[in-house]
Image (cartoon, rainbow, N blue to C red):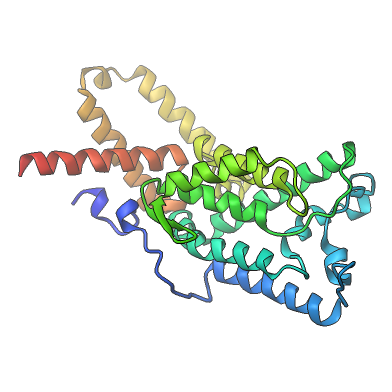
Length: 295
């Protein structure tokens, strides 16, 4: 049985964007938490046309937060507050998180997904805090847009050919990714929209995917050390094993696929790096192509 036949493997054709709800998923819990904060602010924060409400103000990033270390916790809390005067703010953020986040959570696992989301929000929050603290932009920053765009771009990177809808227009996911980048890059200023935060979210997703980050390895420092030791031993083995020099490219690829499958069996799919996942996808596609030609 090829690894592409196993349950953990996903391709663009396997993406299921049909509505479903699993209350135990990270996506569902993040949506519930954001909605709770939104409703609590509406009911008890006394928002008005000139004020976002006391709850939002307690969570949001201000232009002077950089110079108030006791408020640095807002570099993460801002991502759970949404505009009280524009319901589209929370609606479209949560809609994107719902449709694209489920596939990303399925790909990386619940724990890794939560770490990606929270660290992306923190990355965007710190960047926004620095930009506004050192610049002249006097504005309040709130909303999950940076973290949600990070998740959306990870969907694009993992499933570039999956069919998605922009408003009502179907298109490959990679086209939507280009739209995300261009619209935010060329709209660097605008009323009520923090485009810099959006771009930071896209940057975080790009770094995570192409550098092969895996935050699950950071859960236990000893696991990180052991992972480095295993990598070093494999590296030395590959450098000094003469047998590998006699293997063909196809045999080397098959050997690498076996190693990764053994790693999944021992540590689970969340232990894979982005580079290993990409290798499995390419190897799987190669095997499928050979089967088609053979048939």
